[in-house]
Length: 178
Image (cartoon, rainbow, N blue to C red):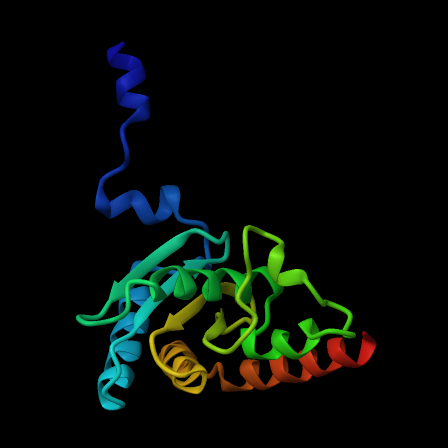
């Protein structure tokens, strides 16, 4: 049993990144920067927010409920992040496709509930690979999106703005195809 226990033990912090973290995955340091940037933007507009960050595998990587943020918005923030990652597009871009008569009408009832209005944005690394998503809830739809976008900008600081523009072009192409 000692042999099994030694093989089951988690690696120390110095080697955990090499052993358990896939190359290119969203790091804890990046999540901390995202949460800090989103919190600062929410404070700047004087609106307490719930901020969720999921990784590329749809697992929660970070979450912050600012003091005074609505409890009912916790689930919404988490679902916005998951919805953005599920479809690799910002939730505000999915909404128009889900209206009556549109090709994705009713999709918000799938996947244990999706959120199809603004506040969920995807995250990409410098290579253009989706590494996760941010979901924000607590203000107006526009405020939620703006706060989430502040988190993306801190990841984009290494040249990712062109990737965000490419995502917008891809979204337009998807909409045209439907």
